[in-house]
Image 1 (cartoon, rainbow, N blue to C red):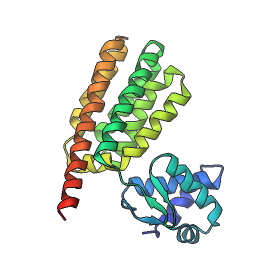
Image 2 (image 1 turned 60 degrees about the vertical axis):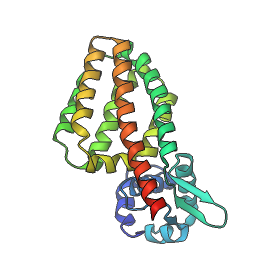
Image 3 (image 1 turned 135 degrees about the horizontal axis):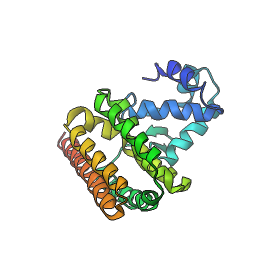
Length: 231
């Protein structure tokens, strides 16, 4: 499993100034894509050897991922891929509603024609995208594009952390459930609310959008937990 990281690291290292950040990007994507499974040990020496670097940036990268909720650092066991429970997923979606509706309230009055054109271009790309990983990335870009006019960088960082925490589970849903068409319709409804500068309607649409995805995710995790208990 640790293999296949070197090529990913080589590609990312051209775009990031610090090695720990590059390692974090590679490990984050490996976890999100399912290359590493829940509970799998992430041994610093193995990762460092595969990437051809020292253990220090790997250790720092794992600490970054722990802060994002993707990795657990356990006494006497080291780092393992964090598992998300149904209760945690429910709480994350509640946090998302609170954060992202705030972003909507702040960004709708400040949005411009250019912002909305960019959002619509991303929706067109989403319509044509079949790769789950790419779809997930574009989905996040769409929301970030709409929220950016709020000019609240710390708020956007908090939102991104919540997205990162559930991304690997959302990818599973996208691959197995017919969620994309409904999601895209809600995206378009959200853009229309922005165009009308209707804050209340935009908040309503986004809340429903997040809660729908949250219900699907929680149901998926509850079923998985039930299966594990029975096994």
